[in-house]
Length: 422
Image (cartoon, rainbow, N blue to C red):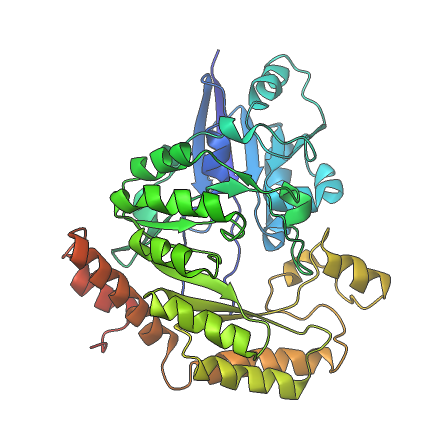
């Protein structure tokens, strides 16, 4: 007997200053690939669709990636449970907020889904659904990770004013780094677990979009694997962005040949190391969107202002500014909580653009003011729309060079990024 399963991705607000377009979420499509064949899944992305709470379903799943989605996810669950429809939660944010989420759920799933869903849905079908399925420290073999089920998406919703943006894909799990503000070590473990290159290539090749976002925490974790991956990507002629690529001329050259379009690169100081890092990306025609975290304990008002000047001097293509946010299960949370410096535990404030703790060298109000200053100053000479259009022109140029550009997008891009762009 088939099970009608409704999978929901709760809405969440954009960062201040971000362009209002949405990428297809990755967690739900990876999860859907692990579902048994007798499960009929219907997906709703509440950022772009309204939820039909009257649609007859047997079981509801709520997939949450961000802390800022948590309270909305609970609201959705409460509505369904009042109707007598059981609800299960999963996803990254569920793992970070498991204890609280249990009070709003019939069941909570923690960990990676591959190989676990047959048992879970059998339990559901037989009326013995467990309150908690905890596999957070028990990772399935990376070889069993298959191609995500993008067929559950309404792809027309993820065009930005007619311009096709990205599809998301991952080539690895886990991270050998354990950075101060990051929860990946808790979520995926500190062991780097690369997927077999041929499986990643098969998945990329199956995606009917030339533009991809490799969502791995960092590609710069294993030189030989990176080299093998990029070599195999070259014939695909995909254009892609990612988090950091190894600062190695051979690897950067291969990445460029493989279609690297731009990277998200954390910038934490004004050193020559950072200046040269950005220059080398640019030398290989790889653009850089700087991810800038403000409010660390060594940050003063003067430092932050000098940092913004530095970002403009090194000619970043784009910048995204956030304030330090102490998400649960990070070193930042543990330290700030222990020091009694967190003053808000309202998860709706954990959007990465609201200050929820007492900074060391300034008031929370001053840090909030400096965040606004950063966005305003960096985009004072060229708006974000113009900078994004320039970035978009780069991918057009790359696509034209290898014959993969869709000419109809030329005029659409002007509508998307600004009517007066030249």
